[in-house]
Length: 282
Image 1 (cartoon, helix red, strand yellow):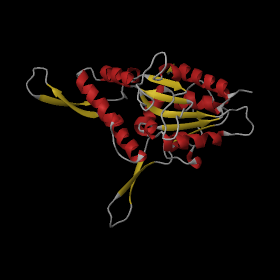
Image 2 (cartoon, helix red, strand yellow):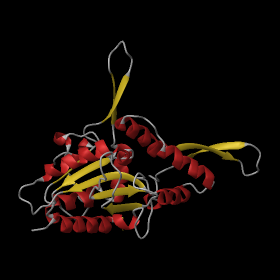
Image 3 (cartoon, rainbow, N blue to C red):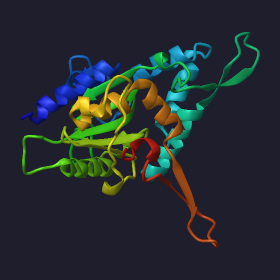
Image 4 (cartoon, rainbow, N blue to C red):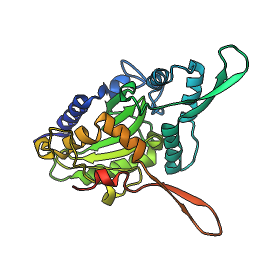
């Protein structure tokens, strides 16, 4: 029977076979051998983000790319779900920047694309294990975080399949705790995954337990039965680079509802199921 560390190692291997790079969280931590963050409050891998922006937007000067990264990282909506929606708009539509014209005569403006949805190979896909972030009460450490261009777009929480006293839903509560105590990790979030290996569920930022659904689709020439474990099916299917980018672009839905006719205030929430057609049982 697998233990949690073995399950994590297997999951990392599936990500790598699917086209993702891997970094060991402690190595890139602020005190690690190859630090990529100044402190544990930072959840964006800034150098990777800027490198990706330069690759995707070669026509835009470095200072303007820095401006775009700053805009993305300083979205200041107080509620996480509203902040997530504002960031998602930037992921899809880009960030407006202005900069001096090449001839020095005045300024011009352009859009900085954060993700290249047209040419997926332009993006850097990275999965990181044991990614420690500062929490309001204590440090929090999800098992795996999936980054696109240095931005944390998915969080994966695993539970020990060898422990008969726990099941997949024991992985759901820690995710809720992360959202409460380390909310900045979810500003860019597009998907949450919980699993005990054999069972796996995926849902949106606001999904309750009933809306965490299995993934049934795997790449051509494979079958879910051949994978054996639902987590493998989910990683090889849902996190296949082209499909995951398509999901981020087309299947993360938001709902706006008027609170009362007289107040004219709107309430924004993420769809309780981010991708019903793809995530629903088949």
